[in-house]
Length: 429
Image 1 (cartoon, one colour):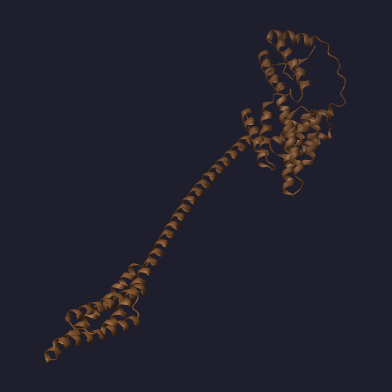
Image 2: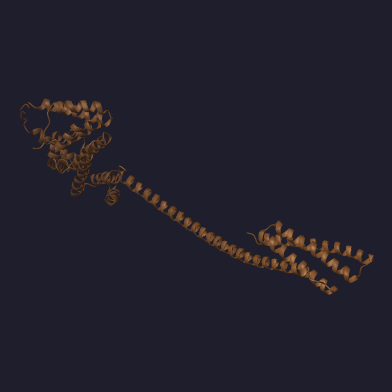
C-alpha cells in the first residue's frame, strides 16, 4: 500500500480539503517539471491523481489512515548513502538561496561543497544551476563544463541550451574586449540559441522559445556579422510568444529608430538636393542673364565704337574741308554765313566725336579746333570788313564781329565736348 504522506510529503494531521489543495499545488509543480524530468514527473502525477481519490473526503481519509496504520511496519534497511545525500541537499539548497539573494560568491562556495558530496550524472537541474552560479562569478570555463554536463544528461531541455548561450555570450564579450578570437564563440553562441528555439518549439515551451528568440534576435542585430531580416523575424516571434525579458522589443525599437533616422536622413538629403538644384538653376539663370548683359554690352560698345568712328571721321573730314574753305574768297555776306556755319559745324562735330569716342577731350583736337576757329573768325571778319568798306565804323563793327564769332565758337566747341562726354557716360556699362 502506497504511503502518500511520505511519497508526496503530506501532513497527516491536515484535513481532506487542505490535502486536496496541497495536491493541486503539487500537480502544478510537477507539470512544470515535465520538460526537465519527464519520467519522475509522470510518476508523481500518477501518485497525485491516486491521492486525490483517497483524500476526496474526510471519511475516505479516515478509512485510508486506518488501512495504512493496519499495515505491519517493516524495518527499513539502513541507507548507507543517506548522510551523503542529506549533506548534498543541504549545501545545494544553501547555494540556491545565496544565488537568489545575488550573493554569488557564497553561492559558489556552497555549490562547491554540494559537488564535493557527490552528484548523480542525470541531475540536469543541479548542473544547470551550478553553471549559472559559476557564470555569475566570472568562472566561464567551469560554467561551460557544467552546462555541457547538463546537456549530456538531458539534451531535450531548452533551458540547458539557453544557459549555454549565456555562457558563450559572456566568453564572446570577453574575447572582444581582449581582442581574441571571437568569431568562433559568436557562432557557438548563436548555434546554442538555435538549438534552444528548436527544443522549445518541439516541446511547446512558449516561455523558453520567446526568450531564446529574443536573445538570438539581439545577437543578430547588435553583433557582427548582422542578419537584420532574421533578427526582425525572431524579434517579432518572441514578442508574439510573450517575451518577458525585453531583448526582442529592444531590437524592434532600435530598428524603428534606425529606419526613422534613415527616412529623416533621406528626406533631408532630398531637401538638400532640391535646394542645390534650385540654387543651381538660379546660378544658371544668373549666368545666362550675365552673359546676355555682357553680350548686350559688347553689342552696345561695338555699336558705340562704330558710331564714334563714323562721327570722328566725319568730324575730321569736316575740319579738313573747313580748313580749305577758310582761305577761299568770300564775296557776299551769304557766303560768309554759309562758310561760318560749315566751319563751326565741323568743329562741333569733331569735338563731340572726340569726347564721345574717348571719354575725355584730347589736346590735339582742342588745339586744332581752336586754331581753325580763331583763324576762321579773323578771316570771316576781314571779309566782312572788305564788304562793308574801309571805314572807322566798319573797323569797329569788324572788331565786334570777331569777338562775337570767337565767343560763339568757343561756346559751341565746349558745349560739344560736354555733350560728347555725357553721351559717352550714358553708353558705358
